[in-house]
Length: 175
Image (tube, rainbow, N blue to C red; front, side, top):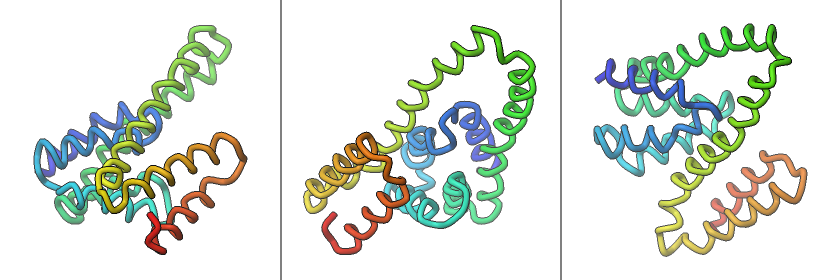
């Protein structure tokens, strides 16, 4: 189990162009659908808990690994997600710094933007889907998503305030 967890997160590391959060749909397929190591609720709760805690965004990987196999699972998942991307990033940064004027390099960087946006959108959709499907939360969740998208696009309001606002609305039972 630990080896399979490590190797899967090792592979995902190379696909996490928008950060580890952009690979959440594939993590879900692996941990919930394919292996059954986590339930739908356990998966979503793990990510929500880690995102609410202070610290780096990638901590949700450790929480997922912990919920699969305890401390060893957390270590396997974190090592898998961090090791290849860290080594590749260090090597690529040195190479890019030496070759930053190349047209192909600038085009490659620009081409990654839509890919990253799509991966992050898929993650948001996957995390919102359980609430959108639940009749008691559907309209509140959809309204909150629409308001968040609108405020993000039309204002310079820091995202932390939107997260805090969503938390307050959830605590009040409105969403």
